[in-house]
Amino acid sequence: MTPMTLPQLTTGRRLSRRRFIRTTAAALALPRVAGSARAEESPRWRMRQGFSSVMLAELPIEDVCARAAALGFEAIDIWCPFGRCTHLADVVKRLGPDGLKALLAKHKLALESFTTYRTKMEKVGFPAYADFIGRFGGGLVVRESEYGSFKPKELSAKMRAFFEKLKPEIELAARAKARLAIENHGDALLNTPDSFKAFVDLNPDPKHVGLGVAPYHLQNIKAPVEEVIQTAGSQLLFFYAWQSAAGVKQLPGQGPADFLPWIRALEKINYQGYINPFMHGQLETEKICAALAKARAYLNDCHAKLAV
Image 1 (tube, helix red, strand yellow):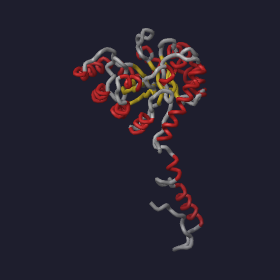
Image 2 (image 1 turned 45 degrees about the vertical axis):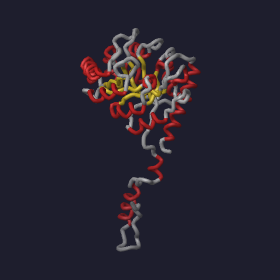
Image 3 (image 1 turned 45 degrees about the horizontal axis):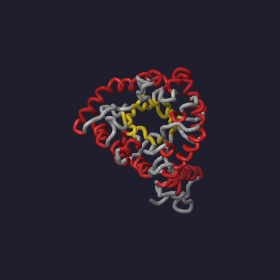
Image 4 (image 1 turned 135 degrees about the vertical axis):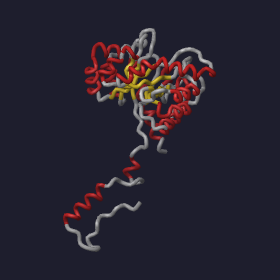
């Protein structure tokens, strides 16, 4: 496409000064065409990183937010009671929706999600927090599927039964302006690549229900992470940058896994959620923060390589 040139005063009839200014301004206001320097400077896909509060379980949520912001993370994933972490329960009891909004604004953080797994400490899960989430203004809610052993031939029937059982929470999510992200786990209904296919095919309400992907559990069954990301497609709402390894090596850039193919797969489906560098297990605050800074930098390097 030939760029528009400024009107010439010396060809044809002479333009008035006012018309010349108006025409010139319109020409300069046109967007640059594809292939221009400005267009090439913009990445095709923007990667955003979030911080899961459980990794600083022993700190109060105020300190967690301060640390996350200082490390350069854009958003926070607040966990319900899990191990030593009590962040979400504390936020509900002590801060309330307005207090949480003020805390996030103070540190220029977005709310990424509320993680509400059912555990021995938290037996109710999402329904226990639905009213708070609704009053906050909604948000993404990460939770589990069904635990147990499932035979491949009964996968579709079990997935239909899971969605039927989930209906009350789907309706609750709609009222609370929330979306549910169901995460895969070892020894769970949502675990294998085939289970992801069944989920996507049978999902009764993609507007309010989608997927969370934890590569750690996929690697444990030698399942291809990129294939699962492709299967999840537009239903992917949450992604852990988490590899199957011990201790700090679970984090990106510190264990054996190459995350670039995973990041490339996320770009390919135009994933719009956050990516969370993640590990289970408690480290001293300064050590985990240093490791997370390294992990974040590694993921940024992976993102930079997408254009190469």
